[in-house]
Image (cartoon, one colour):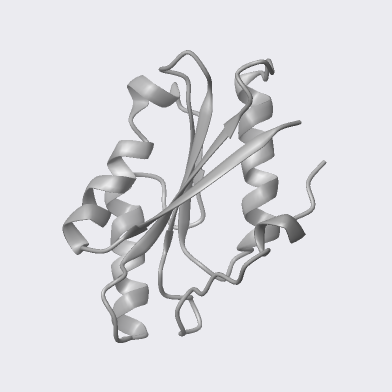
Amino acid sequence: MSLIIKMDTIKTEEHLRKSIPYIMNERKTDGLCFSNAGITPEQILDTFFLTKQMHPTHGTRQGYHFKFSFSKDETIAPEDALSFIREWVEEYLGDRYDYACSVHKDRDHMHMHLVFNSVARNGGKYRYEKGDWEKVQWH
């Protein structure tokens, strides 16, 4: 399985407010999405901002947006892509961060999105160390 992961930072509150509805857009997902922070984009955003309010930090990053793509040569069922992203997120983030994930089926190749809070549920900020992604075990 060939996987490409790209990460973007979400630097403004406005960008974060647009990111969750974008990745959960029903026309793109056909309902293939999940979150540990709520059901609707509004609930998820409320949870993100509540976490930030409970654990104020310095800096401008509001969250992170990961995009996952399999090789165009690979055929993956949408439900398998959702299972994959769920396992990956549970291994990588666990319940330490608020997050929302989805599978988009609106392009020639299926891809997945993950948006998660920059602030951990117990305080502190997310920090990526080189090689972190390679440590994630998936089946």
